[in-house]
Structure formats: C-alpha cells, structure tokens
Image (cartoon, rainbow, N blue to C red; front, side, top):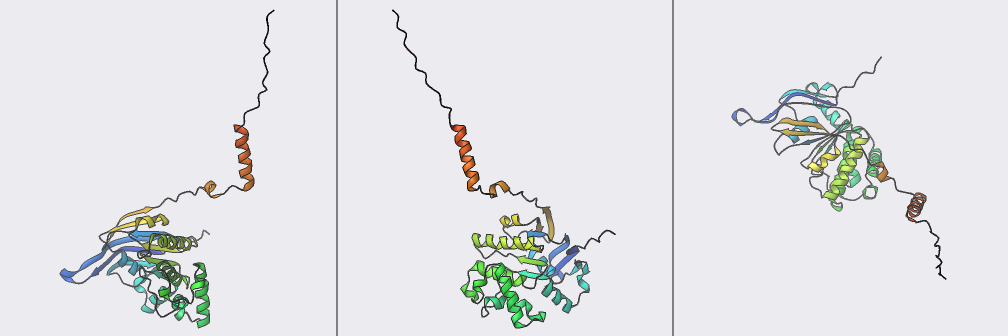
Length: 277
C-alpha cells in the first residue's frame, strides 16, 4: 500500500474577518484561500492594514474568523473547544513577536521556561529544558541575566528560545526583526533559517523585502486578499568557493604557476669573427 499523504499544516478556504457592525464594519480578510504544507518557510508581505497580523492571529488561534474554513493539520478549527485551542497553542505553535514580551522581573532562563508551566513538568525539569534551548542560541552564559541587561538582538533570541522550548511544529513570527539593527536582524534570520532546516514550518510577517531571501515562498497581501504567491528558487551554493585550499594544494598550484612562467634556459653561442687574409 502507498503511504497516505499527510494533510496540509494549514488550509484556509474563503476566510473572512470583519471588525465592527453595520456601516462601521471593516473587513480585514476578504475571502482568503491559502494552503501551507509542512516544512515551508513562508514570508508574508504587504502594506500596513492589509490583514497580515490579523491572518497570523487567526492561524495562531488567538482570534476567530467571521466566516470561512480553517483546517489545522486536517482538523477543522471551528469545531475545537477553548481548552483544546489552548492545548494546541501550548504544544504545536510557537509565537515570536516584534516586541520581545519578556517579563522584566524574571531571569532569562525563567522567561524561556514559562510555556512549560502547564506541561506538568517539575520546576527543575522546566529550567533544564530552558537551559538546553538557550544553548542552541549560544545564550548559556546569559541564563541568569535580567532582560534589561541584554541587547535587543539577545532579547529577541531569548524570545525565539521561549517559542521553541516546548518543541512546536509551527513558528509564527510577526516582524521578528522590526526593532533590531541590520546586524542583529541577520543573526535572528540565520537562527530562524536553522530552525526551518530542522523541519519546522515557519510563517513570518515582515515589511523588509531583504528578509524574504531566507524564505522559500513569498506571499504578498493586498486589501485582505492574496495578491501574489510565488515560490523562491534556491540558489545553488558555490561549493568551490567555500572549500579553502590546503597548504599542500597551494604549494602545488604555486609551483605549477612558477613552472609555466619560467622560460627555458638558452645557451648562448659566441660567434667567432672571421678575419679575411
């Protein structure tokens, strides 16, 4: 028997979201259709007010659509109870926001351990899991720092560690580099890229077109709908450029160049003058 194809991680059909009533009603999402498969890195772009954050909140079960269908791993979301929603958010979805949302009076390791409070683990087990996750982001030396003692990039890395501590399969990132400088932004995106390479599904909202180079799919939204949806063709790495020459190879290459440049020695033959008698 052929293996059964798993359902998409996210499937939306005719999704609508409106705020307000009557003449004051505002449509944030207007009949959106979207399918995201496991392991994709999707970047969502668009002007302010086009519905990007509203979409992310619905995908993360923080908000409900006004109309339409939403299936999460093949399960209709509208049939899920509030307690089940909370369980899914706790176990399957990790959130990374533009504002780091760290508790100022808790240490770094305590902030990372927060999502595990309702997991039934002991306090020591939670701290051990948080410490293990912090090591992935090279923050083991900052475990007992307070948030105000960290740089912006370090705080965002702590926020990502907190999103990953319960090993979710889906990461939702809303402008994860919006408050960071270019160098810190690059570090954060490299971290997210590594998370994606481990098999996680990542959906990232961003205004920065440079960050889309890390995604394998780019969706551009306009007026609550998908305007364009394109796959990104990955660039083939130049492996030759990444492999440094060893000392031996450099020596051989240098000798080859020297031998090709050297001219063969020519023996000068002196010409004798012929004296006529």
